[in-house]
Image (tube, rainbow, N blue to C red; front, side, top):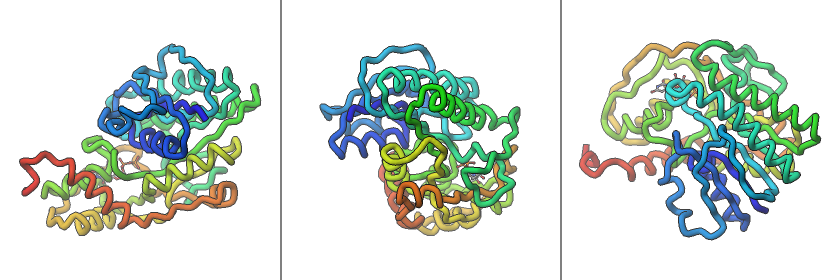
Length: 316
Ligand code: UDP
């Protein structure tokens, strides 16, 4: 297959490119590097089956086809990034999704959009099933991300209904692993960075809020299965093992061998209190479930960040 992946220099996009290249496919990757990183693609520079086009998918662009599969993975996924770039965040979900859907329509390609558990907002239903419509503040600070993803789901369904395009919607829950940005503010790189530097671990609120963390290799496996054998309705992809942020900080501190203190900060506005995917649909439809236990995935991730720490602070 010839596959188009937007957001290819990002955390999930670069792992997806690796997954398809390893299976003998060709990948054309798009990225405007607003949050993506060249380092995530360094190992692909001399790979003939990979081609990078540095461009903004939210602006008009043309690209020669045909493609067999189009994956829209470009997004500003970290709260710090989307709060700093709310308009770009809305644009990549709106114009970006439209531009990539048009390429899929032109080429009669399958289309997959990486949506998010944020479509459920601060959920009143727990765990979250795909049938739950969500509890999203449409004008709050997180709305630029949540509503851009909800719009991109709506647009994808419209293309499916109007043009019979074979589309897929993945609702991705918190995912972690190597190639996350070190300083993007998300809880995984943030706490690992703090633990490795011996700085205090910052917990927002009282740490009783929960998340469910999926290792990136499991997520990529789920996305590839969904592209191949799913249907048009949304599918949750995530690890149902739920943990409080307080307990999560303690696990990171232990695995990093750190004696960092814990420091409490105010909870950001509209921060969801609980989040855990119901993955029955992914299990039934795709035969998929996550396999990597939290501690194993976190060890890999901690090693990744440890290896990338500036030389002068290695002994800190
Ligand atoms: N969080 C925290 N300390 C940090 C960063 C995040 O306690 O240094 C909390 C955040 O308030 C949220 C959870 O960890 O409750 C996950 O945050 P993240 O930004 O990773 O993603 P979210 O799931 O909120 O999109």
